[in-house]
Amino acid sequence: MWLENHTPVLFQGYNRGMSTVIVFSPAIEHTKRDHPEGSHRLADLLPFLDMQKVLADLRPLPPRLASLTDLRRVHTEGLIEHVRRVAERGGGLLDHGDTYATTASFDLARLAVGGCLTAVDAIMRGQATNGFALVRPPGHHAESSTISGFCLFNNVAAAARYAQAEYGVERVLIVDFDVHHGNGTQDIFFQDESVLFVSTHLFMPRMFYPGTGGVNEIGIGSGRGFTLNVPLLPYVGDEGYGRLFRDVVWPKAKAFDPQLILVSAGFDAHWQDPLAMAGLSLRGYAQLVRTLVEMANGLCHGRILFVLEGGYQVDALSYGILNTIYALLGRDMWQDPLGPMPQPETDVTDLLVSLRERHFI
Ligand SMILES: [Zn+2]
Figure (cartoon, rainbow, N blue to C red):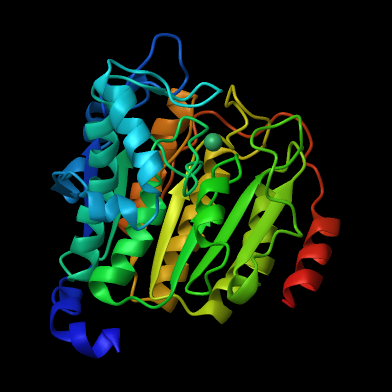
């Protein structure tokens, strides 16, 4: 039993109130001219957070390099070697799409994974209640043996496996609210009942990347029922997302009873994001992250780690991160200088009905 083995360490610090760890790994040398997933995304983030007066309340920890063992828990040797070789020969494309590596990318992608593991250590040892791994490159499209969608190694999946291997965590909930389906994370845990994977994403096969994540993809074998895909039409906004989280994600999570929650936090479902056409506002995002933090407080002693994925409108990304930090710190506030989506929302009633039927909610 993991709780018995780790109780003395796990509960250190619980009486000291909320404590939030932040790991920052901006991967400045993993960048490509005119590419949306570049180092410009996080270039001004720390001064912004400092100006907003939250940095001083966070516990910063340096990221570490993930080991090959850490990577092998979620990826094949072939994938790991591929990244290493492309970086070693000076960089280039890693897939047939637009996923690139520079000479520094093998180490920087390991640092992104290692940053998540550092945060998991702090949370599982009770040195922090929750945290945010502000890392690049993102990870949720990286499958066990296939690279795509700007992702090299699957940060959130490696963090889940690490928590299981190092701390004996039996049930990990991964919630992915990036606007793109977390096909990589789904692939890694599709047959696994110890990880519940929930993804909300825009779903338009052949029109919107990656095209997977339909309601019928629910896991196979012993993992059947442990993948919950919430495929959305364009322009679902704050109200629709709110209903889906309240009426589907929350009850599904509660029934699973996680011991740790990891979040693939992509901010490209914001209505101003240039790569997508979902309808969340910053206020809507703030409500989602508050729901998730409440979920962690109610279900697993507050243990929740947000891991950065996409988000390509830099203001939406920065304020989205800020609002998430407010929620992690337990502050009852958010900021939304960009306002709500201008057009009417797409209704989600039919989707709700279909998800409840399929998942017996
Ligand atoms: Zn995305």
